[in-house]
Image (tube, rainbow, N blue to C red; front, side, top):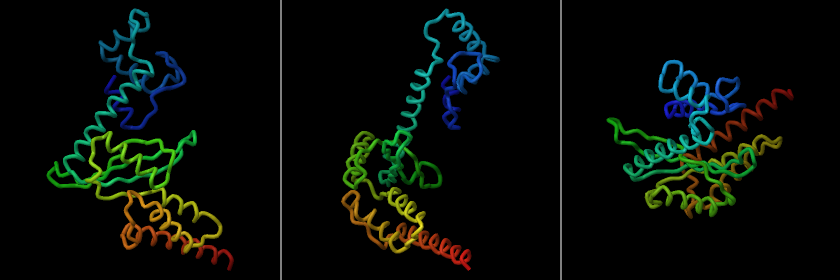
Length: 233
């Protein structure tokens, strides 16, 4: 069952269907894979026979055990990532706030570090978890980041970089309006980053990531304005 959970999670496939019973249609990927395994595994075959005959009370096939296995595997993966981060010592984070289906603001935490455990050192990027946030200001994001770093037993003094994708999203939405004022968009981008004073660090306007995004914004504006001129001519 653990192998089934791992395979479904790796491929980001849904576990549950419209029915939680065995040998019925639309009962979900998890139960269907359990049924497939029972075709050649005698232990699983006997387990399903006893479950259908109600000879056992706990079948370990319901949604609760699925969620528990997912949580246990996720904790192991998170622990392995944190172990790598501690070995590398210095790391950077990327934070991105976006509302979920219930319009609750969530912040995704991504960590970047240099992994030198292999023969060739490589820069790795891993998503760690979602954080529910009520305050998307610089102070609010800093507070949530401090809490999660303490929970993960990571030292904030080893943090050497941070990124805010939320600022880029705001500018992207602004560029989709009819005005397409590129100067206003660039000013908005700088205000989103510098105005937050994220982690109480003033952002240098000569940083290459900001210049890179600025060039991208100008390029988008040029293409859109060029298209408008062609259509109007």
